[in-house]
Structures are given as C-alpha cells and as structure tokens.
Length: 276
Image (cartoon, rainbow, N blue to C red):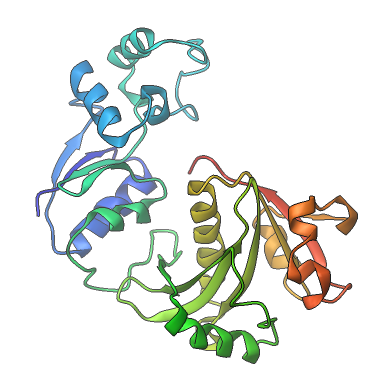
C-alpha cells in the first residue's frame, strides 16, 4: 500500500500517526511540509479530496492565524498566508488509495490503512489507541453481559435510535463497550463499561473520547450522560454537572432519564469537541 504523510516531527499527533503507519508494516513517503510545503494547487487538491473547505485544514492554535486576521479570509488570502507561513497547514494529512484525511486524532489513520496493526498501539503519552466496532444484533449479548456485571441498565438495549460499539486494541483485544443514543444535536453517551482486567490502564478515557468523536462526526453538538459512580472520571474529561431540569426534551425523554437510571444519578453535559 502506498501512503504519503504530510508530517511535522515537532507534533506529537503527527509522530503518533507516522508510528501507526509503520506499525502496520508500511514505510510511507514522509513529506516534512515545513521544509517542503505543498504547492497552492496541491493544497487545494488535498482539501477537495477530503471534501473540506481550505480553512478546515488550516491550524489556528500555535500559528499566526489570528495575528494575520485570517478568520474571514477567502481562499486566495489563505493561500497567500500559507505560502509565507507553512505552519498554518494542520497536521498530519495522510494520503492513501482509500482516501485523504486530516488525522486528528492520530487514530483516524487506521481508517485509511489496509494492513492490520502489528502490535497493540500506545501513544507517546501512554494513552492506548482503541478501535470502535459497531455491534450488530447478534453481538449485543456480550454488551448486555458486560453491563449486567457492572450493574448498568440493559432493559432498553434493543430499542431504536441507539448505536453500540465494542472497543478493542489495535490487535482486536476487547477492552470495553459504549453507545450513543439519539439523532439530533443532543446525544446521550451511555453504556460505557471497561473490562475489569483493563481498568486503570486509561482505556476508559480512550473509549469515552472515541464515542465523543463518533458523535461529533455524526452531527452531534452537545453530549449528555447519567452516572451513578463515575462523575469524577467524566469531570476530568470536561463534563459539567447540571440539574436534570435543564436537560433538553430529547434527552429527558430517554429511557435512562425516565426510570432506568436512579434519581440519584448525576446528570452531566459537554459540548462536542470540534478540533483535536
């Protein structure tokens, strides 16, 4: 498989992405774009192949984006700025026959590779990478068993408007489960459970953040959850405690809110993360 990565070796996300490509047994073409930036035509082509406007593949944090007044700039002005400041290009961009993606977070690259990972991948900061496998009806028993063992609700798993996932290491070892309920701007993060033998190894954070990304990619704007014992964990991930009376109608109408979760369960919310 031919892979090209537009890489910044000073960026941890870019380094992790490159390492995952190599962990699939692939040696990519590495373009250090600060030294060899893409041409204006190449950059526009990359954006077009991703189906994104040019500004969506530019980086604001840690760049002169704001100092240059680019918030409302058109493509021509943006390209002029990139010519002078290649650091404005977000990273890493990965190109394969399967497509072109801005790989933020770095595990997005796994969607582009046709070779499996050779080992269970852990990022530089010690955070494990998990892969979400959508559960079909035949596989729901494993989820129900895991939730029952953790004393979490199972009565509504078969109802409509729910997506559940098995989370695994990059070599397909199961580490936990989780789900997303709803279809509008407000979604319920639910049924998050980590296998007992995987607890204390940062898999809970990886599962929760992957669910957040999946919800965001599907159009969610705000995430909601109920928890009886994990409020401190979710608070560390940026969720805020709220009064249940503040829940939007779509969330308040869920089975979890109506009775599956006890009235003592903490209600927490978080805006969907839009950049990584």
